[in-house]
Length: 385
Image (cartoon, rainbow, N blue to C red):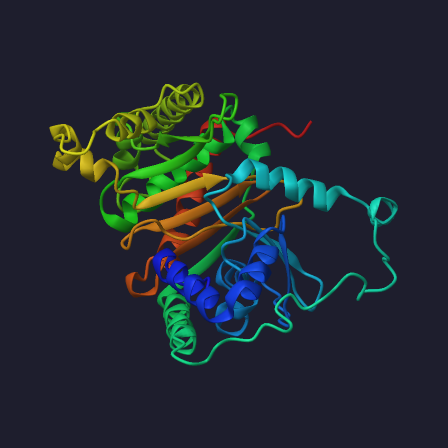
Protein backbone atom coordinates (compact mmCIF):
# COMPACT_ATOMS: atom_id res chain seq x y z
CA UNK A 1 0.00 0.00 0.00
CA UNK A 2 2.86 2.42 0.70
CA UNK A 3 4.02 2.07 -2.91
CA UNK A 4 0.90 3.93 -4.07
CA UNK A 5 0.75 7.65 -4.75
CA UNK A 6 0.56 9.72 -1.58
CA UNK A 7 -3.19 10.42 -1.75
CA UNK A 8 -4.07 6.75 -2.30
CA UNK A 9 -1.80 5.61 0.53
CA UNK A 10 -3.30 8.22 2.87
CA UNK A 11 -6.76 6.87 2.04
CA UNK A 12 -5.56 3.28 2.55
CA UNK A 13 -4.01 4.11 5.91
CA UNK A 14 -7.23 5.75 7.07
CA UNK A 15 -9.15 2.67 5.93
CA UNK A 16 -6.76 0.35 7.81
CA UNK A 17 -7.34 2.34 10.99
CA UNK A 18 -11.11 2.37 10.41
CA UNK A 19 -11.37 -1.40 10.08
CA UNK A 20 -8.54 -2.24 12.49
CA UNK A 21 -9.50 0.13 15.23
CA UNK A 22 -7.29 1.50 17.99
CA UNK A 23 -5.05 -1.57 17.93
CA UNK A 24 -4.21 -1.08 14.24
CA UNK A 25 -3.51 2.61 14.81
CA UNK A 26 -1.13 1.83 17.69
CA UNK A 27 0.71 -0.81 15.68
CA UNK A 28 1.05 1.51 12.68
CA UNK A 29 2.46 4.21 14.92
CA UNK A 30 4.94 1.70 16.34
CA UNK A 31 6.15 0.80 12.85
CA UNK A 32 6.26 4.43 11.76
CA UNK A 33 8.22 5.51 14.84
CA UNK A 34 11.27 3.45 13.90
CA UNK A 35 14.38 5.39 12.88
CA UNK A 36 14.88 3.04 9.94
CA UNK A 37 13.57 -0.15 8.41
CA UNK A 38 15.61 -3.31 7.78
CA UNK A 39 14.42 -5.28 4.74
CA UNK A 40 15.69 -8.84 4.34
CA UNK A 41 15.18 -9.95 0.72
CA UNK A 42 15.39 -13.45 -0.73
CA UNK A 43 16.94 -12.27 -4.03
CA UNK A 44 20.58 -12.88 -4.94
CA UNK A 45 21.42 -10.03 -7.36
CA UNK A 46 24.89 -9.98 -8.89
CA UNK A 47 25.23 -7.03 -11.27
CA UNK A 48 25.03 -3.33 -10.46
CA UNK A 49 21.89 -3.08 -12.56
CA UNK A 50 20.16 -5.96 -10.76
CA UNK A 51 20.98 -4.43 -7.39
CA UNK A 52 19.88 -0.97 -8.51
CA UNK A 53 16.49 -2.16 -9.70
CA UNK A 54 15.76 -4.04 -6.48
CA UNK A 55 16.96 -1.15 -4.33
CA UNK A 56 14.93 1.40 -6.28
CA UNK A 57 11.52 -0.27 -6.21
CA UNK A 58 11.87 -3.87 -5.02
CA UNK A 59 10.83 -5.32 -8.37
CA UNK A 60 7.82 -7.55 -8.79
CA UNK A 61 9.19 -10.01 -6.24
CA UNK A 62 10.16 -7.79 -3.29
CA UNK A 63 8.11 -4.61 -3.67
CA UNK A 64 5.90 -5.92 -0.88
CA UNK A 65 8.93 -6.09 1.43
CA UNK A 66 9.26 -2.31 1.72
CA UNK A 67 7.66 0.52 3.68
CA UNK A 68 8.12 3.37 1.24
CA UNK A 69 7.19 6.05 3.79
CA UNK A 70 10.31 5.29 5.79
CA UNK A 71 13.15 7.80 5.37
CA UNK A 72 15.85 5.12 5.49
CA UNK A 73 15.43 1.49 4.50
CA UNK A 74 18.46 -0.77 4.81
CA UNK A 75 18.03 -3.61 2.31
CA UNK A 76 20.06 -6.80 2.61
CA UNK A 77 19.94 -9.55 -0.03
CA UNK A 78 20.34 -13.28 0.52
CA UNK A 79 23.90 -13.24 -0.86
CA UNK A 80 25.09 -10.54 1.54
CA UNK A 81 24.89 -7.58 -0.85
CA UNK A 82 23.24 -4.58 0.78
CA UNK A 83 22.11 -1.05 0.05
CA UNK A 84 19.90 1.83 1.12
CA UNK A 85 16.64 3.31 -0.07
CA UNK A 86 16.10 6.91 1.00
CA UNK A 87 12.80 8.80 0.99
CA UNK A 88 13.70 12.32 -0.13
CA UNK A 89 11.31 14.57 1.80
CA UNK A 90 13.13 13.99 5.09
CA UNK A 91 16.71 14.43 3.94
CA UNK A 92 19.06 14.91 1.01
CA UNK A 93 22.06 13.03 -0.29
CA UNK A 94 24.77 14.15 2.13
CA UNK A 95 23.08 12.88 5.33
CA UNK A 96 22.61 9.55 3.57
CA UNK A 97 26.30 9.55 2.63
CA UNK A 98 27.24 10.21 6.26
CA UNK A 99 24.98 7.39 7.42
CA UNK A 100 26.30 4.98 4.78
CA UNK A 101 29.87 5.97 5.62
CA UNK A 102 29.22 5.12 9.27
CA UNK A 103 27.74 1.74 8.33
CA UNK A 104 30.52 0.76 5.94
CA UNK A 105 33.38 1.97 8.15
CA UNK A 106 32.15 0.37 11.40
CA UNK A 107 33.90 -2.92 12.15
CA UNK A 108 31.92 -5.92 13.38
CA UNK A 109 33.81 -5.98 16.68
CA UNK A 110 33.02 -2.33 17.30
CA UNK A 111 29.35 -2.86 16.46
CA UNK A 112 29.24 -5.83 18.84
CA UNK A 113 30.74 -3.75 21.65
CA UNK A 114 28.13 -1.04 21.21
CA UNK A 115 25.19 -3.40 20.76
CA UNK A 116 22.67 -3.56 23.59
CA UNK A 117 21.12 -6.79 22.31
CA UNK A 118 22.17 -10.42 22.10
CA UNK A 119 24.16 -10.60 18.87
CA UNK A 120 24.29 -14.40 19.06
CA UNK A 121 20.50 -14.80 19.03
CA UNK A 122 18.91 -13.45 15.87
CA UNK A 123 15.41 -13.63 17.35
CA UNK A 124 16.17 -11.44 20.37
CA UNK A 125 13.74 -8.55 20.62
CA UNK A 126 11.87 -9.50 17.46
CA UNK A 127 8.08 -9.59 17.45
CA UNK A 128 5.39 -9.41 14.79
CA UNK A 129 4.08 -5.86 14.97
CA UNK A 130 0.63 -6.63 13.57
CA UNK A 131 0.18 -9.91 15.44
CA UNK A 132 -3.31 -10.09 16.94
CA UNK A 133 -4.74 -7.25 14.85
CA UNK A 134 -8.22 -8.15 13.60
CA UNK A 135 -9.71 -6.32 10.65
CA UNK A 136 -13.44 -5.74 10.57
CA UNK A 137 -14.12 -7.36 7.21
CA UNK A 138 -17.61 -5.96 6.91
CA UNK A 139 -17.64 -3.19 4.32
CA UNK A 140 -13.84 -3.13 4.27
CA UNK A 141 -12.17 -1.63 1.22
CA UNK A 142 -8.71 -2.90 2.17
CA UNK A 143 -8.67 -5.97 -0.16
CA UNK A 144 -9.54 -3.83 -3.18
CA UNK A 145 -6.95 -1.24 -2.17
CA UNK A 146 -4.28 -3.93 -1.91
CA UNK A 147 -5.14 -5.29 -5.36
CA UNK A 148 -4.96 -1.83 -6.91
CA UNK A 149 -1.67 -1.03 -5.13
CA UNK A 150 -0.16 -4.26 -6.47
CA UNK A 151 -1.31 -3.45 -9.99
CA UNK A 152 -0.01 0.13 -9.82
CA UNK A 153 3.34 -0.99 -8.42
CA UNK A 154 3.72 -3.66 -11.09
CA UNK A 155 2.98 -1.09 -13.80
CA UNK A 156 5.49 1.31 -12.26
CA UNK A 157 8.17 -1.38 -12.30
CA UNK A 158 7.38 -2.54 -15.83
CA UNK A 159 7.19 1.01 -17.18
CA UNK A 160 10.72 1.88 -16.07
CA UNK A 161 14.09 1.13 -17.56
CA UNK A 162 17.45 1.40 -15.83
CA UNK A 163 21.02 1.16 -17.07
CA UNK A 164 24.33 1.34 -15.22
CA UNK A 165 27.35 2.72 -17.06
CA UNK A 166 30.59 1.58 -15.44
CA UNK A 167 33.15 3.70 -17.25
CA UNK A 168 36.70 2.55 -16.56
CA UNK A 169 38.47 4.74 -19.11
CA UNK A 170 39.55 7.21 -16.42
CA UNK A 171 38.33 8.97 -13.31
CA UNK A 172 39.07 11.94 -11.10
CA UNK A 173 42.83 11.33 -11.10
CA UNK A 174 43.12 11.94 -14.84
CA UNK A 175 40.67 14.85 -14.75
CA UNK A 176 42.53 16.61 -11.91
CA UNK A 177 45.87 15.99 -13.60
CA UNK A 178 44.43 17.69 -16.67
CA UNK A 179 43.53 20.69 -14.46
CA UNK A 180 39.75 20.28 -14.55
CA UNK A 181 37.16 19.96 -11.82
CA UNK A 182 36.01 16.30 -11.86
CA UNK A 183 32.34 17.14 -11.29
CA UNK A 184 32.21 19.98 -13.82
CA UNK A 185 34.11 17.90 -16.39
CA UNK A 186 31.63 15.02 -16.04
CA UNK A 187 28.72 17.48 -16.20
CA UNK A 188 29.96 18.59 -19.61
CA UNK A 189 30.05 14.95 -20.71
CA UNK A 190 26.44 14.65 -19.54
CA UNK A 191 25.58 17.79 -21.50
CA UNK A 192 27.15 16.39 -24.65
CA UNK A 193 25.40 13.04 -24.21
CA UNK A 194 22.06 14.77 -23.68
CA UNK A 195 22.61 17.08 -26.65
CA UNK A 196 23.18 14.08 -28.90
CA UNK A 197 20.21 12.19 -27.50
CA UNK A 198 17.63 14.99 -27.64
CA UNK A 199 19.10 16.98 -30.54
CA UNK A 200 19.31 20.06 -28.31
CA UNK A 201 20.27 21.04 -24.81
CA UNK A 202 17.50 20.54 -22.28
CA UNK A 203 16.84 21.83 -18.79
CA UNK A 204 19.47 20.24 -16.53
CA UNK A 205 19.40 20.17 -12.76
CA UNK A 206 22.41 19.39 -10.62
CA UNK A 207 21.76 19.28 -6.88
CA UNK A 208 24.03 21.62 -4.91
CA UNK A 209 24.25 21.63 -1.12
CA UNK A 210 23.48 24.75 0.93
CA UNK A 211 23.87 22.97 4.26
CA UNK A 212 26.03 25.72 5.84
CA UNK A 213 22.78 27.70 6.17
CA UNK A 214 20.25 27.05 8.94
CA UNK A 215 17.78 24.46 7.61
CA UNK A 216 19.66 24.64 4.31
CA UNK A 217 19.05 21.80 1.88
CA UNK A 218 19.76 22.23 -1.81
CA UNK A 219 19.94 24.79 -4.61
CA UNK A 220 20.03 24.16 -8.33
CA UNK A 221 23.16 24.37 -10.42
CA UNK A 222 22.01 24.85 -14.00
CA UNK A 223 24.39 23.07 -16.34
CA UNK A 224 23.02 24.73 -19.47
CA UNK A 225 25.03 27.92 -19.99
CA UNK A 226 26.20 29.89 -23.00
CA UNK A 227 29.59 28.29 -22.56
CA UNK A 228 28.31 24.71 -22.34
CA UNK A 229 26.15 25.44 -25.41
CA UNK A 230 29.20 26.58 -27.37
CA UNK A 231 31.10 23.45 -26.33
CA UNK A 232 28.44 20.88 -27.28
CA UNK A 233 27.69 22.59 -30.58
CA UNK A 234 31.36 22.50 -31.50
CA UNK A 235 31.55 18.81 -30.56
CA UNK A 236 28.50 18.17 -32.74
CA UNK A 237 25.52 15.83 -32.76
CA UNK A 238 27.87 13.03 -33.83
CA UNK A 239 31.59 12.44 -33.29
CA UNK A 240 33.71 14.22 -35.89
CA UNK A 241 36.95 12.31 -35.25
CA UNK A 242 38.94 15.46 -36.04
CA UNK A 243 41.04 15.56 -32.87
CA UNK A 244 44.19 15.05 -34.98
CA UNK A 245 43.63 18.48 -36.55
CA UNK A 246 45.40 20.82 -34.13
CA UNK A 247 43.20 23.87 -34.75
CA UNK A 248 39.98 21.88 -34.22
CA UNK A 249 41.32 20.13 -31.14
CA UNK A 250 42.54 23.34 -29.52
CA UNK A 251 39.24 25.11 -30.13
CA UNK A 252 37.30 22.23 -28.57
CA UNK A 253 39.63 22.16 -25.59
CA UNK A 254 39.35 25.90 -25.05
CA UNK A 255 35.55 25.72 -25.21
CA UNK A 256 35.60 22.80 -22.77
CA UNK A 257 37.72 24.83 -20.31
CA UNK A 258 35.34 27.79 -20.56
CA UNK A 259 32.31 25.55 -20.05
CA UNK A 260 33.89 23.88 -17.01
CA UNK A 261 34.86 27.23 -15.48
CA UNK A 262 31.34 28.60 -16.04
CA UNK A 263 29.88 25.54 -14.33
CA UNK A 264 32.22 25.92 -11.35
CA UNK A 265 31.28 29.60 -11.01
CA UNK A 266 27.56 28.82 -11.10
CA UNK A 267 27.99 26.00 -8.61
CA UNK A 268 29.95 28.24 -6.27
CA UNK A 269 27.21 30.87 -6.36
CA UNK A 270 24.53 28.24 -5.81
CA UNK A 271 26.32 26.84 -2.76
CA UNK A 272 26.36 30.36 -1.28
CA UNK A 273 22.57 30.68 -1.75
CA UNK A 274 23.07 32.91 -4.78
CA UNK A 275 21.22 30.64 -7.20
CA UNK A 276 17.91 31.58 -8.80
CA UNK A 277 15.62 28.57 -8.33
CA UNK A 278 15.07 28.67 -4.57
CA UNK A 279 14.68 32.44 -4.82
CA UNK A 280 11.90 32.06 -7.39
CA UNK A 281 10.35 29.29 -5.26
CA UNK A 282 10.31 31.58 -2.23
CA UNK A 283 8.73 34.41 -4.21
CA UNK A 284 6.03 32.09 -5.58
CA UNK A 285 5.17 30.96 -2.05
CA UNK A 286 4.53 34.58 -1.10
CA UNK A 287 1.61 34.77 -3.54
CA UNK A 288 -1.53 34.82 -1.41
CA UNK A 289 -4.92 33.31 -2.22
CA UNK A 290 -6.75 35.52 -4.69
CA UNK A 291 -3.55 37.22 -5.90
CA UNK A 292 -2.29 36.91 -9.46
CA UNK A 293 0.96 35.01 -9.94
CA UNK A 294 3.60 37.22 -11.62
CA UNK A 295 3.66 36.78 -15.39
CA UNK A 296 7.20 35.42 -15.45
CA UNK A 297 6.02 32.15 -13.88
CA UNK A 298 3.88 31.38 -16.93
CA UNK A 299 6.40 32.61 -19.49
CA UNK A 300 7.13 29.74 -21.92
CA UNK A 301 10.90 30.11 -21.61
CA UNK A 302 10.72 30.16 -17.80
CA UNK A 303 8.48 27.08 -17.77
CA UNK A 304 10.77 25.24 -20.18
CA UNK A 305 13.85 26.16 -18.16
CA UNK A 306 12.38 24.45 -15.10
CA UNK A 307 11.42 21.25 -16.87
CA UNK A 308 14.32 19.09 -15.74
CA UNK A 309 14.65 16.55 -18.54
CA UNK A 310 18.11 15.83 -17.17
CA UNK A 311 18.04 15.57 -13.39
CA UNK A 312 21.56 14.88 -12.14
CA UNK A 313 23.40 14.52 -8.85
CA UNK A 314 26.91 13.51 -7.81
CA UNK A 315 27.57 11.41 -4.71
CA UNK A 316 31.06 9.95 -4.66
CA UNK A 317 32.23 7.64 -1.90
CA UNK A 318 34.89 4.90 -1.98
CA UNK A 319 32.47 2.34 -0.53
CA UNK A 320 29.57 3.13 -2.89
CA UNK A 321 29.23 0.63 -5.73
CA UNK A 322 26.41 2.57 -7.38
CA UNK A 323 23.53 4.90 -6.56
CA UNK A 324 20.68 6.60 -8.36
CA UNK A 325 17.09 7.80 -8.61
CA UNK A 326 14.24 8.06 -11.10
CA UNK A 327 13.40 10.70 -13.69
CA UNK A 328 11.51 13.80 -12.53
CA UNK A 329 9.39 14.34 -15.66
CA UNK A 330 7.90 11.77 -18.06
CA UNK A 331 10.23 12.64 -20.94
CA UNK A 332 13.31 12.99 -18.79
CA UNK A 333 16.22 11.00 -17.37
CA UNK A 334 17.51 10.63 -13.83
CA UNK A 335 21.32 10.46 -13.68
CA UNK A 336 23.03 9.65 -10.40
CA UNK A 337 26.82 9.45 -10.75
CA UNK A 338 30.10 9.01 -8.92
CA UNK A 339 33.55 10.14 -10.04
CA UNK A 340 36.04 7.76 -8.47
CA UNK A 341 39.82 8.05 -8.87
CA UNK A 342 40.06 5.58 -11.77
CA UNK A 343 36.45 5.18 -12.95
CA UNK A 344 33.08 6.91 -13.32
CA UNK A 345 29.74 5.26 -12.57
CA UNK A 346 26.37 6.41 -13.86
CA UNK A 347 22.92 5.15 -12.88
CA UNK A 348 20.52 6.09 -15.68
CA UNK A 349 16.73 5.80 -15.23
CA UNK A 350 13.84 6.72 -17.54
CA UNK A 351 10.50 5.46 -18.77
CA UNK A 352 10.79 2.28 -20.82
CA UNK A 353 8.71 3.64 -23.69
CA UNK A 354 11.21 6.44 -24.31
CA UNK A 355 14.12 4.05 -24.95
CA UNK A 356 16.49 6.63 -23.53
CA UNK A 357 18.70 4.72 -21.11
CA UNK A 358 20.78 2.56 -23.45
CA UNK A 359 21.29 5.37 -25.96
CA UNK A 360 22.20 7.88 -23.26
CA UNK A 361 24.64 5.40 -21.72
CA UNK A 362 26.30 4.92 -25.12
CA UNK A 363 26.45 8.69 -25.67
CA UNK A 364 28.07 9.16 -22.26
CA UNK A 365 30.82 6.66 -23.00
CA UNK A 366 31.36 8.25 -26.38
CA UNK A 367 31.52 11.77 -24.90
CA UNK A 368 33.97 10.78 -22.17
CA UNK A 369 36.24 9.10 -24.73
CA UNK A 370 36.19 12.13 -27.04
CA UNK A 371 36.92 14.52 -24.19
CA UNK A 372 39.86 12.38 -23.10
CA UNK A 373 41.16 12.37 -26.67
CA UNK A 374 41.20 16.16 -27.07
CA UNK A 375 42.93 16.53 -23.69
CA UNK A 376 45.55 13.81 -24.22
CA UNK A 377 46.35 14.65 -27.82
CA UNK A 378 46.84 18.29 -26.95
CA UNK A 379 49.32 17.34 -24.22
CA UNK A 380 51.42 15.41 -26.71
CA UNK A 381 53.55 12.34 -25.96
CA UNK A 382 55.13 12.16 -22.52
CA UNK A 383 58.74 11.13 -21.85
CA UNK A 384 59.27 7.74 -20.22
CA UNK A 385 62.77 8.65 -19.02
